[in-house]
Amino acid sequence: MAESAVTTDTHEVHTHEEPSFVRTYVFSTDHKMIAKQFLFMGLFMMIIGGSLAMMVRWQLGYPEEPLPLIGVSQEFLESDEPQTAADRVWQEWDEEGTENWLVENMPYGVMTASFYNMLFTMHATLMIFFVIMPILVGCFGNFLIPLMIGARDMAFPALNMLSFWVSVVSAIVMLAGFFVSGGHAATGWTAYAPLSADPTWTGVDWGQNLWCISIIILAISSMMGAINYITTVINMRAPGMTYMRMPLVIWSLFIVAILLLLALPVLTSALALLLFDRMAGTSFFSPAGRGDPLLWQHLYWFFGHSEV
Image (tube, rainbow, N blue to C red; front, side, top):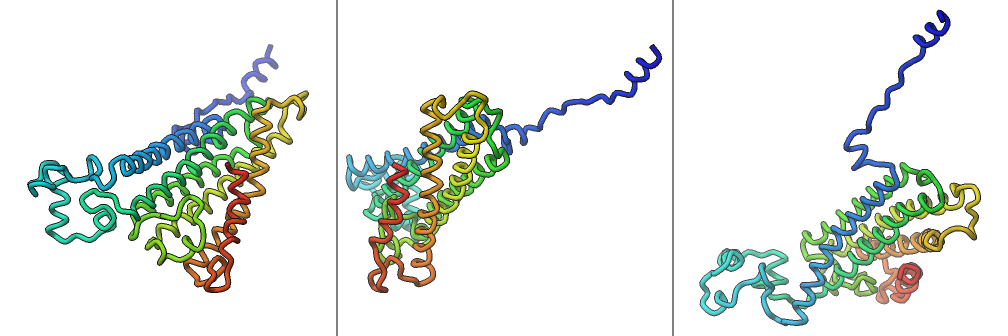
């Protein structure tokens, strides 16, 4: 009895500390929480991309008409008397001679051709890179792969967390392009050269540069995720879960990860060359400097075909 009492007293009491709110919901390494984070980021960017699509459709349905909410009212156009808050803002800008990107591209809320090109480009960019990829690959991949192959988590939980937050940085850089002088990229989501290689063609300078930088950062994030997916599927399947027993969903995500790992370095290199053309005076894609515009298409669609 004495020995038993001594033994009991010498045992250390281990207490389990609950993780903090930040550790649980912000900087989480749990694959389910990271999947939810990718989902919410994708839905947020979908709202922005969908709003741009509605503006495109307004222009197609009511060409040269002021946009609702931000444009002037018909009464203001007819009488010059402000009827709404937007009327007063445009009147003040007109009286003060304010010069900004919005005034130049949307006088009195009426869309110009350059503004339409920007809307079309950024709607497609956001939906492809910041909605489809985060939700279909980031969200479903993170949530389903460990559960459906019998793994406790992803192979590299910290890298998984880093992948999400790098994608957030990419989204912030992309959204910053709406607030720079000259507006955002206006060369289509494929950014065909030489239209994208020379700022004089579109009048867009830093908007297109930020577009390139953002996609480079997003490609790095996606490569992190692809490495995680491939390693998890190869090394962490439960006993008895052979390749031929894996669900078709896991096979599709596995192949997607392999394709991304092969294609994204090519896209990243192409974007770097495009940035050099725009900022360093090189001529990789400019015919004037004996560059080849078709080189951009070959490099871009090496990624683009596997993406779509």
